Amino acid sequence: MIGNASSFLLTKETFGSEQGKIEEKLVQMGIEHAAVIRSSLLLEEICYRLFEHKSKEVKVGIHRRFGAVSLRLTSEGEAYNPLSEENSWTEEEVDYFRHIILTSNREWLGYSRRNGKNCLSIEVRKDKKKQVRNTLMGMALGLLVGSVLEEVLSPDLVSMIDTYALRSARTMFLNAMNMMLAPVVLFSIMAGIMNLSNVSEVGKMGRYMMGLYLVTSLCAAGGALFLGVHIFSGEFAQIGTAGDTAAAHMSLLDMIVGIVPHQFAEPVISGNMLQVIFLALLFGLTINSMGEKARPLIDIVNAMDTLCLRVIRTIVRLVPLVAFLSMASLVFQVGLESLWAFMEALLAQGLMLVFMLVVYGALVAAAGHLPPWIFLRKLAGFLPLPASLGSTNAAMPFSMELCVKQLGVQEKLAGFAIPMGASVKMDGNCAFLILQSIMLAKLYGIEVSSGFLMTLALTSVALSFGSPGVTGGAVICLASVAVSVGIPIEAIGMVLSVDPLVSMLRTPLNSAGGITVALLLARHEHAVDESVYRAE
Image (cartoon, rainbow, N blue to C red; front, side, top):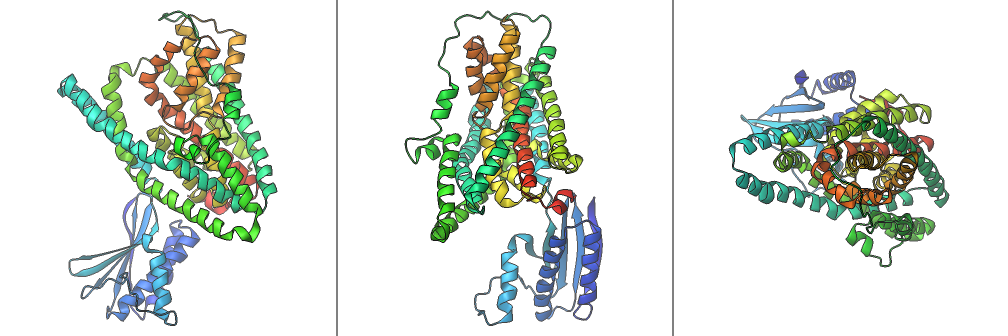
């Protein structure tokens, strides 16, 4: 719905009764109680200033646009901005506290001067799906513009646009995101641990989380094995034969030993998320055990956590533009016709996403004792964001926001569980490794035996717990899996060309798994606000 829902005329004499009518109308529109109270308080403070500035009346309209709801205030008279800064008040004056109320909520307020009127806005509820909608529009426009330019321009000019404009801008965005990922993980986990009451909570929650990780990973592996065997059945055109597969690859032992860094700053500089988690746990638990002596450190870590998340939110405003660039570049690189070459692999990955969403919904109902359809509906509206980013780590701030603001998870638990999940919880990668390996084995004439499938499942589950949560991270792990089951290493080149498309189905599954575990962990710790969870 778009438009003006209701309008009210406020004067000094009628303010109290009209304010009550506005509150009642907002409640009828399904606005959360806290948002109604905040908006009503801000309305009172603004109208107080306007009346003091000799405004006789203030017209208030309730506007709804998609999911956003706002109060629009207009008053006639000379130009006056009641939101302007005033530093002359002292703490003894009433206006000082009114000023604090307005400045602390400045992000919800706006002012402009139009047609000789003072126009103000109070944002009651933000449009939660605005970013998703803009991202989907960017993806669609990217496909359209890429297809048109490929038809009308020469191949050399298309290649130049792709190299110097599209991919360069996307690389700059991803570099900015990668720059902040390690600090965000480090300070989020540290802040989450320090806000817990005692160290034993961390160990208890860690055991519960690992149990959930194992359950969902085994479900992902089982589902991928079943789909892979059935979808890639029958005869395939052979594109090569299995020859020498010897290549350096990451072993499970190397991954475990490598968790402990040999230099303090190296994990943050290199972006090794398992090492960053180790540092965060080590320092977070130590600071937690120091009691009040660590209060200055706790304040610094909390401030850095807030700073890093706000920087990330500033960067991710460009996500719709990046989605446009990514889709246009994908068309330039592989062409619309070539996108059909791996349709069976895409179908399998898409079916895995649907299957695991059913699994997550069942876990929310069985272990969380919450209505699963509410969770799945909110999750479905969120998934286009990680799909457009192609990076579980890059989607992490959005995942935390979804958990806190839409699922009712306490912020301290979201700050602990989501960074952990974004680094070690990769159901999408687990399914991807199995499906792609079975497909490549078929293309290279390798027998898909029970031993092959068992080795593939164990290796994929192990690597999914430590695979990089960045763009293309799953392909890196695929090389190790391929070697372990006898697939030629050069076969990985086939996957690279369409990996951006496959990643649009793989990354949402990674993010969804982490969000599910975070919700179940919070539910286990009695840290879910059900009113937020059930709210529209």
